[in-house]
Image 1 (cartoon, one colour):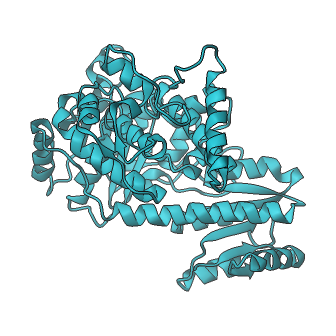
Image 2 (cartoon, helix red, strand yellow; image 1 turned 135 degrees about the vertical axis):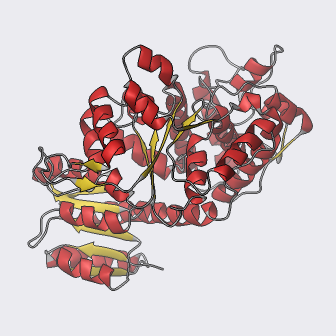
Image 3 (cartoon, one colour; image 1 turned 45 degrees about the vertical axis):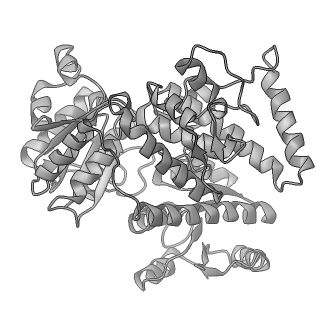
Length: 487
């Protein structure tokens, strides 16, 4: 097992955390400054979780965070901070911090937080391992075979590609396949959703910034173009990019040069750009919302990805794959669809496409009461949409069906609080059965349902979903990671 690394110039803090973690059976390694920790990384060692103070002589925790994230982007980092430093700690989230721990802290709370970060690290490792074992894409439908053939034809090319298709249809999977089967496959694949990042931050995300370029820029940061050097940069939802940034992007595509925010020295870009959008870019050009010259730069080769309702013959194999994958993630036996349930799925139009089918399969893995899924076990909204006959609500806790457009409330009771009674019934069943961690199990289901429903309403836009739910952007990102809801 990898160690928990603690870096703090205060010996007493290191001592307390070492003893507390040792009592929990967790290996721990301590450092008094960032320099020592970076030297350990240079030697090839790495932690499972990093706990770092924010203020240390010889280098701040924020500087260390940036350097560690460049080497280990999936590593959970907890920033320790005094209450007077909370503003700085919040800004650390922009650098990828997992959570912050205010000083003075309660030791059991610190250990619990480190435990959560450790679980996140383990999930990342499992996800990376499983992603290397699964097929890139699934599909026997003629429309998907056309896509596969196009990927094959482009396998020896570095040409710019524009992928179009509805939200949730798998555009990023196509982009990853294009990268994997290209001369740049040994280089990095870097993806960014231009619609999910506020305009004020997007320029820095793309091109990086120099230290002191703006308030909060405490260290020089490499942008996505630099991170993707020698590889592929995937610009998702390119149709939502602000006009002024479209101009900068056009310049990079034209001559391969750009400037960091606040920088004065030109940077060279050796990057293949693959863009994607669910919008009609020609119409956006006519409306004056998208530059025509940029459109022609991007539209060298266009691949259209079919909606799931255009490839219904693939729904069965996709559903089986997603049910198997959800079962593996949850550590349970995979559910199977009856012929009647599969027929109901095939008859559904799936406005959220493959992503919606994946969410439904995950929901079934948690909520379906038996190993064989029958039509009555399917999410209530899917039943109502795909069949005119009224159906009974699925047994168990009636929460929002992931990927659906509205929460699936039980049909047994009148009034807006019927779902509360149903949740109480499920809690009683679990308690009587002696199930462990009932609180955590039901809380995770409830939170996952809220977040997935909000993301469906906002078509996957996390910031907008967080605003609608009344929570912070960092909170929804952390919850998505904790609950395993990453698409």
